[in-house]
Structures are given as structure tokens and as C-alpha cells.
Figure 1: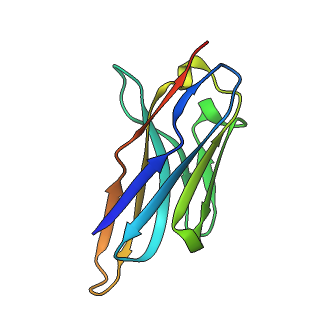
Figure 2: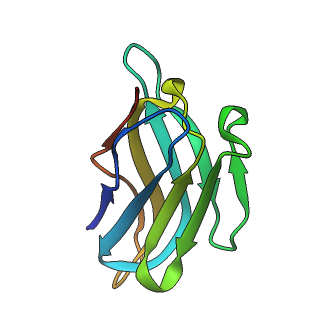
Length: 121
């Protein structure tokens, strides 16, 4: 069993910054893809940023140049540095990852519980 725990959300003024973290724990042999998604009230969940095990990244057009995704493989942790935040970035942010377990080598795909980001003056 693998768990993901997000942290770092909160209330920030427009133009401000926040750094989200997503820590994976459990029976982890390897982590392949990791990603941040968000869901605003009344809207569908959308992909914000994605990073592969090799470090390749891609971003939603709405956050390019403002958000940076990264990962520390030694700590099984992913980050999202969010700068120049806008009110439209307000949402619950979820992390998602997939990989292989120890032991039987079972593929897993897990979501975190989400962390609220509110951008408001």
C-alpha cells in the first residue's frame, strides 16, 4: 500500500508564492510518473504539471512560466513551486503518482487527499 500526503497549501495574496509538497510512503520500490492536479469549485479536475522519473516536465498553459514542478527521488517527494499566483489558481490541489511496490512488484497509482490553495486579497 502506498500513501501520498500533500502539504503547503494556504491563503496567499495575488502575486504571492506558495510551495506544495507531496510525500510518498509505503511499499515503494519505484515511483514513475508524478503530477499535480487541481479542482476549483464547480469545475472538473485538471492537470497542472507532470514530471517523469527522468525529470521531464510538462505544464498546463495557464501555469507555464509561473509554476515549477520538481522531485527528490531520495525522499520520494514531489514539489510544486507556485509564483505570481492569481485568484483563478484557487483550488484544491491533489498529487498523483504511479510506480511499483516492493515484494510482488505490483503496479500502483495513488492520489493524495488534497490541499486547499486560496488566492485572495
